[in-house]
Figure 1 (cartoon, protein in one colour):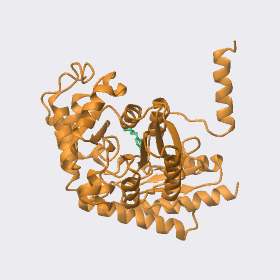
Figure 2 (cartoon, protein in one colour):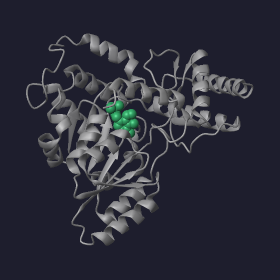
Figure 3 (tube, protein in one colour):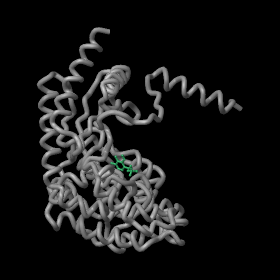
Figure 4 (tube, protein in one colour):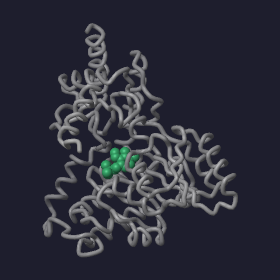
Length: 385
Ligand SMILES: Cc1ncc(COP(=O)(O)O)c(C=O)c1O
């Protein structure tokens, strides 16, 4: 039998050789990489609220939500969140990863087809895998390809005995682009699939009061017809946690079958207290949202004018595409040396290396200009190597 630690060393050597080694580091520099898009993780009112909380015992939730881990603040937050995004019911879980993974595992199974955008998040892909469903990848954002796959499955199973599920992010975290939601809903109408939409990176920024992309692009009836909407508290709400919005019976079903919910300690009670407060702030941040999107447009224009290659980003997430892993690492390290926290994203997280630049409301236009200036300098350094 092979020696385990030799095997581990070999794997690490191979990761190093491919310039794909990762390590945890303490952050520093101006934030161009976090998902704290609305700056709530360091919002002074959030800190005041936290410090005003008299009753923070128990620190931990002490058990799963089905045992002793449920608190009034969790139930309240779920109601508030469901109201905010106009859903029937919501289920709070410990992370967005848990939400996607557990949801897909709960609603899919071996006798089921799941159609997934090729670039969906790992939590979605792993949930499908663990469910044992037949996974059908469609090309990124390509609803024509999705249609052709749905038609093919209809030929195999014309009476639609087997369940069809379609799952996509509304805003892709590593590309900054979005599917055409109207056309997706039209396909749902035609083919009758179950739709799971992950609003992780759109919630808080798009739509009235930051309710998400569905509120910008769809009407009330269309929104209500989405079977499951997945959100995370770890991005625009500045905290941690995941929340699934669905019908009341959808929630009851998950509470009874979702293993990553049933068999895991509930989130800290303080999380749901803070989340309620964060939600109350989010609605009134229109000025910040507008400013964020103006900065994003400015950055995209400026990068293009300076000859940088970026994805077809339609959002505040602006990936700058580079040729090699080594180049991406060089850019990220040089920017970090200059005090700008930009990170290299490499396979297998994404198919091709890039800098994932994500903007947040704490930045200003001077920061944006500085970033472009530094990028130009780094490019000069790189070409002279
Ligand atoms: C689209 C998407 N969904 C879900 C998650 C997981 O959320 P969390 O970080 O709360 O576990 C992420 C994380 O980056 C994500 O990008």
